[in-house]
Image (cartoon, rainbow, N blue to C red; front, side):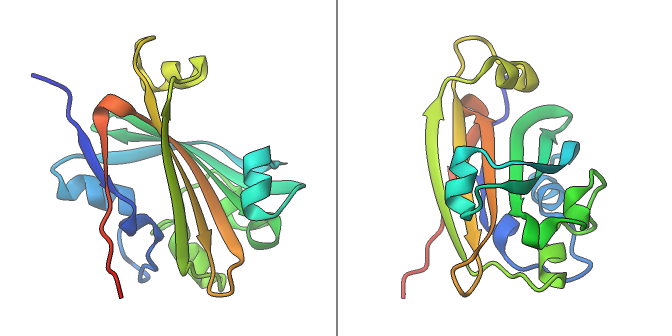
Length: 178
């Protein structure tokens, strides 16, 4: 029996959600017959890495939530989500506790709704830390996805830096053209 290939879509993670809706990762995994869980490994203020500083327009401190995502108890994704301190400082985004319904609902409750999403996908070999966290062999590459979410005025709300085992991931995109 081979490894399961996860087909992921970005839409559930960026669309505004209603209060009470399930957290997107658990919901998407359940719809595919799996169990999606996550472990928050860190949350708090850090100095913005260069790529985050450029994408958020913040060159000082930012808030980050670092998570390991699991599909059926197998680590399948590493995600670091960065927020400007003007949005996230002092909120649940800066704490390691789970956010009911996910961060998108909390952002909406705080008055911040994403209206545009930019994503970039690339492939590379993992770092030693990524290889260990994802249980990869030395020869297995990863996919990286960088996502920036902006509000209606074009202000960045968050940047996600994600790392996936390439052999266990397929990304799916749908587009509606006007």
